[in-house]
Structure formats: structure tokens, C-alpha cells
Length: 612
Image (cartoon, rainbow, N blue to C red):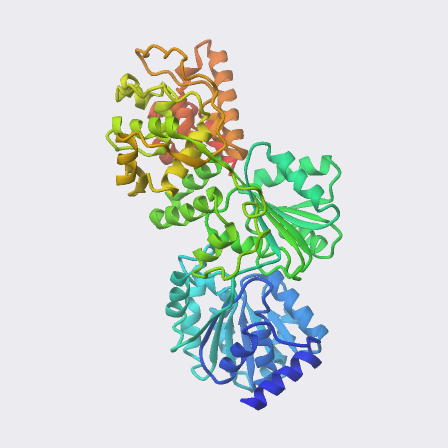
């Protein structure tokens, strides 16, 4: 084994030009060279590729690397060839003659590393080619191995076929690599790839060079511009939820003369490839993209990553911010979030295979965004790692002055009293609506507008009530339970309420001096508060809402009837939330019957389809 160590160190220096291994690299290489199936979790920029490239040069046979993206294969092969290593990729991007020449070289034993997509590996033709090689298959490496887990943020069914192919080459050692894997995902990787008693290596998830910042989304474009200006003339990636949002933000930044391009699945292959190439080569500074962009992008000098919208999970978030600062230099991760983001994500849960799992992943993201404690500690804790030493300037929380404790006794009592009046059967949103005196249909139907706590909370804005709710949870006065996040008083909360205990919390509290304002008379019918729903939306969801509203008004004007005759506001909201894409789905929307669907359905579906 000492011989392997010295040979590996020699290759590291002579072939790749590096002086020393990064943490765990040598341990992983030894494990692979001993013929032990290995699972390695290393952060983006941690040097995963070296863990199979060096063994590939030490093994007598061929190393197969299963990679999800053509662009990643091309990038890796180009880098390896620059280092004098015989590496190839076999995929649809090759001309037929080049494909045949590459297969010939592979069969003859000239090639040390071959990159394949999981789809390509699964074909009978590719398996026949590998069986016909004059040298054995020594190692099968699965890059981005989290794709094999349904708990991973980027599950790909084709990865499930890898284990069957691996059994055709029982002598080959298997190495699975990923940058993000919770204990659940690690277990899935080992199980679904059928690794044999794998050695598992988990490097630290702590990317000390990335400053973590989270801001409520209030003026998103200017918040983005502010971040860009802090990193003037540096490379950055901005992630958006939808293609339309990508296009709009790209146009807005271009109009302000920023060097920017877009990337999403709606662009042609040629355009995506061209834009990515310009970004990688520093000919364009900023890439605005959906999550389709970034996996395997080996660009070391990305100085900032902005999430214009909230990601669906902390795994996805961590993977994406990991594209900043791969070179180890100081970088910046900015997350903007809003209630509208959460609504958009939850809408897509209807199509998810396991909505409950999706909600659990989203809750982890929400908790992180709303955290009042060290973000780095919380992020690492999610992946099962404890921050050993405090870093005073690692995130926006740690680098700012602590919020002073304020006397929140009165608003806290109002909130908890409202919970009691509602018999502890509701979540935060409903409780806040009651406190704010909302006249939405559900409240009126339940006659909760007659409660003594209805409308007594107008001294705080809605977002501040949500913030107070989270603080009461963090400080043990209330708990959130069940699938619908129902709020319940704890013993501490009950005692504080009954004994009128003083409640001091870190909360920036400025009452609007409406404590003595006269309470509005209870309405006799449901009245939708103008703009209340729209204020919870942002991005493409808000645009769709406004577009549907304008369209409804035009149709109503043409027919000389009030807009609600066409359809009411509840229907409008459900159209945004449910986002129906066919007649069957449209008929599931409140207020849309068969006749209405036949009359205006095609127009509605066409409008909604433009916001995919």
C-alpha cells in the first residue's frame, strides 16, 4: 500500500501538477485500489475527480465514469487530454465516424477512462462494446451519485439501471461520488447501486470561503443589482424558478448594461451550449438560469451565486451555492425568499411522486431561510455535521449586531389567545388572518369574525406576525405539529398566557399605534380583501395572476357584465395555484364547470401554458 501511496503522489504531481492531496483524497484512492466498493461524499470543489482519475492510471484496465451531462464529459475529457491522459466520451454529440474511431480505440485497449451517460451505459450496444474490450473493466465510477436516490434533489431513473450493468463486470470495483448526501441519500446510494460492504467517506460540508446571506424578497431586482455591484466585473450565477423569470431578469439586466446571458431548457441545444461556453470562458460575466444549469460546471472563479427564488430543498441549495468559490477564494451566496416562492413550490407537489417527502424537504429550506441563528451551523447540521469552531463572519446572522430583546408580551398574548379562541385547530396563516381582521370566505363561514381576537392585531404587518410566530416556536411557547402544521401551546405557553408573564424576544418591534382603533363591524358576507392574495405572490405566479385578471376584465367588458360573472376571485386564485394544463385539470378548479370549460377553457389553458 505504501507503493500505491507513493505512485499516487507521483501521478498527482507529475500528471496533474498538484503538490498535495486534499482531505480524504488519498484515503479514497487507497480504498478503491484495494478493490473495495466506495462511497465518497465531498463538497463541490473538493477534488472528487482525482479520486477516480488517479486510480484509473494505476489500474491495468479501463475505468468507466457514469456522468449525467454531455457538457461535463466534454469538459473532463478535454482537461484529461491536456494532461496527456487517454480519455474519451461516447455520446450523441459525436459524429458517426468519430464514434466508430473512439469505439475502435476503446476495444484495442488504448483508452484508460471512458465517460458514458447512464442512458448510454444501459444500451445493449454499449454493453457489447465493453465486453469486447481487450483489457478488463477495472473500475466503474458513478459521478453525481445522488441522482440514484429519490430523496436526492435531482433523481434520475436511468441511474437505477447501473447496478444491473455493474453485475456484468463483477471484478470491477465501484466508486460512487456526490457533493450532497444526507444519511437517507447515502443509504439509498449504497442500496440502489448494490455496493458490496462499501467504505464510506464523508468530507466536511463546510465551505468556509462562502459567505451565506438570506434576505426577504422585497425589491428583488434592486437586491440582485446590489449584490452584483458588490462583485463588479466578477462571475456569478443567478438561479430562478421558471424559464419566464430567467428571460425577464436577463432582459432587465441587459438593459442595465450588465454582461449577462440566460440558460434554461426552453433554449435550443446550440444556444445553451454557446451561452455556457461563453460563461465558462469568461466572455460573459453573469448567467441567469434555471436549475438545469450548473451540474458539473468546472468553473473555479464564480464569485457569487444568487437564488432569485427559493430552492425546493437544502440539498439543491447546497449543490448550487457550491458552484461559487471552487477555487477556495472568498465568495458569496445570496438567497431571496418570499411566501410566493413557497406557494409556487407547493403547487408542483401535486405532480410529485411523494408530496409528503417534498413537503419535508421544503420545510428544511424554509427553516433555514427563516433562521435567526448561525446559517452555517444550521446548514451543516442538516447534513449531520457539527460546526466545531465558530466563524464570526460566516453568514449574515453572525456578522451583524444581535437584535436586542424587546417586550413582546402584548402581541404574543394576542397571538396565543387567538390560538386558544380557534381551539388550536389552525396553522399560522389562518391565525394571522384572524388577527388582521381578514374577511376571507373561510373565516366568515366559520364565524371567526365574531371572535374577540378578530382584528385585534393590526398594529403589526402580516410578515411581522409570521416572524413572531417563528420566534414563539423557537423559544418554546408553541409547537407546530402534523401534516398541516397546526399550532399548539406548550406548557410554557399556557403558563405565560395564564400568568401574564413578560415575554422578551429578539424582535424589531414598531407598533403601528392601532391598538385603540375601532374594530370594524362584522361583515354579513364574504369579502375578498383587495390585493391580499396578490401580495403573497412574486415572479411568474404574480404575472400569471395579473394576466388572468386583465383577461377576465376584458371578457367581462366585451360581454358587458361584472368580472365575477366570468369567474370569481377564488377561481382566479385556484387557477394560479393549480396551474391546470388540460381540460381534465381545469375541471378540478373551483368555479369551472363543463360549460364554462367549453366556453373559455381553451383560452385559459393557452394563457396558463405560456407561464410554464
